[in-house]
Image 1 (tube, rainbow, N blue to C red):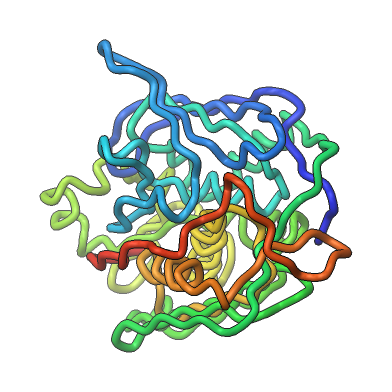
Image 2: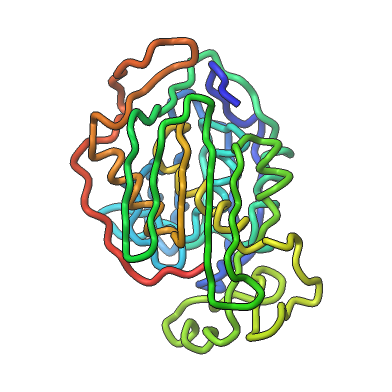
Length: 317
């Protein structure tokens, strides 16, 4: 999985759809970027508003209720960033401009599959500059009730171990564990869809969430069965989607991780909290390049040790 050089896209690629929470139409365009740009979101101006730009890292997370929201001191820039981030990260794209003309990344079919296809269409090219990894040096754990997430050292690359336990006959206890690379992500995670419970729909709508959710973009579950006419894509699609979300949230480390991430009954809030805890402890991580002895490399992408404590709120799938 590990590569010595940074990458970007060869060409632009665009997708259009609606936001799963806002139900608003949106077009997202992935564009090539220079080395050391990282993943940068640009919200195009509308109604006289100026363009806004933020680099996607742990400091840019403004909310984790029902989705990972990126923004800055001026407010949210875009919501539901996790699926496109997962595709970008897992396919090994270091530098990309994500241009978006609405408040939310399009949900597409509820998975990362459309974003994988967009990256494939654009193509990936190698740049001359070396790639930096964030190497986890010691365990970092965040616990919230019976849920927890932890990052552990792993020199081989990124491994994600996800465990869920729902009091529902179609879900129950499920575990997904795999080493993340482009092939495993395509094959095992990219097509797993976001899911929700029919009994929660009215409550979500009244709170202003899931306004764009439907059978084309969400795996919907009643008390006894899956309501989607096409059924499930995997027998354990629920935990696979949780793992997909985890890959996307971990992309906000700001560089590829050399770590094992273990999540038990977690979600966006736990994922974000673990990254905050990691970055807040300068003895827990360091930057490395492939083939080099671990060493601290200072640069504009470094994340300060002083990060605000994560704010917890409701979490769904």
